[in-house]
Image (tube, rainbow, N blue to C red; front, side, top):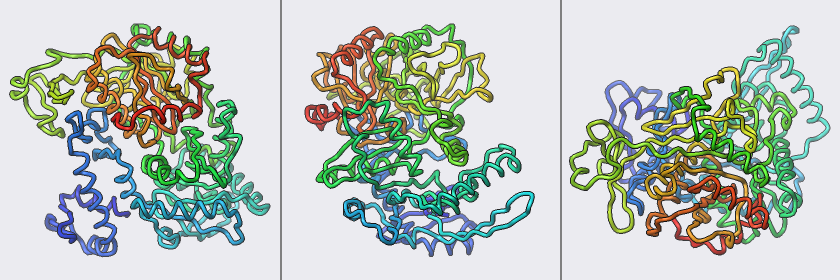
Length: 625
């Protein structure tokens, strides 16, 4: 087990484990600490001490009230992060990259003999030093890996082959490697391994799913990529350093072409993150398809605010186990119909490129099957989302007095000074707006959203619309006529973001959402001069956490909350920027949002890609959140 698993396992068995005066302290029920566990504690003592120190810093950070009077822990629970069947423990939110860094462990794969790319060698050394400077634990390759052997059995002829290799341990968050063009021999071995896997999958597995590690064992012996050395690809990201692709970072290259280049680069290198390097610039690419470019003298800010957040928060979809499932009839929802209209109106903007089917992009069956496991059965990827928030749902008084607040009961898992509930279970929030505290009911939130992978500009009312709810947990209603066991109906990656924006608007800018509100996201930005009075832009200087993650939901909630302190009564539109990703928009009216986006695109003031991000960074203040 790795350090996190050891500590969490002990805590689940009632063991108190903490650091005091730099000493490891344990208080345990009788019989829990066996000789095996004692041996693990001794062997991993230094790592456990580091983990607990960092955990202590995290807890004090997440419990401390922010400007709105709420702690990060409270915000996290409000937007739906309450654990699931696979991981019942609540995930503490971290939005400070310096704290993220302290919880990361990375390793650098040694360069092959004769490697001569001097710019990448220089950048690699700088990157390693910056990791050290920010507190990331950099573990030498020999310590980060362990010996591993397994046996391949070729069916029917019963030929057995023992494979010995080294694998990166599960506790390593990322492996940094360089692009290694395949040799003639490796191409031949890869071809043979793929044929073996296809044969095994068809005749032995009979197309049953197996784990990522199971697939890797069947094909790993023939791979030259760093993924070959990873024990569990769902826990360890691969970061590849390669030559900067000038076509990809060129602002004149159409974004649809960038999608093709980006996906092919990620799949060719079988990596989650690719950093392109030249003598004067570097870029970062992940499944968000960011085309962000940095000058070499920006490496400090890049490592802290772009790379570390992406390593700490990998892109993963929300599993269905997070939701309580139900059904709804899209024909009876006026907001589902508004969402379809919104999607059709946005077709002319070209802000939503067609999605990419994984089966068309990933040629090798083994790689498709690995990605299929990681993305929770999704068959495609798309860039952007469209959603429509229903008006917030309240029962009883929307806002109460401090006297009424004092009479309310505590709510399990929430600080009593931030969240309480009345006799019928409606929860109220104590939140700071300007200089005074307000006591507001936490409404039920419902949004209509396009399913993952759908055509965002031509939605089908019957099969493409999902209804997602946020009460004291996450809810998901599927179209009545759709069987999710048969049809690929999965929620968007951006569920946390949609819900966080909607809840934040209900609490802090209620006029924006009181009649329902359209919400869109695309992988581009407006120029600063596009904004009109009563239109606001926040989030430009946030750390660039990947799309749809729990942390990105927290940032979007904080972005909306920050507007409450500006004492503005008529928010027509809010732009919530996600660096290295794109922009979310929420508006008070469907026609208003469509007209503004269409005008911006026609005037060249809104474009896909990172072309206009520099103008926002230069003109939007750094103290927005």
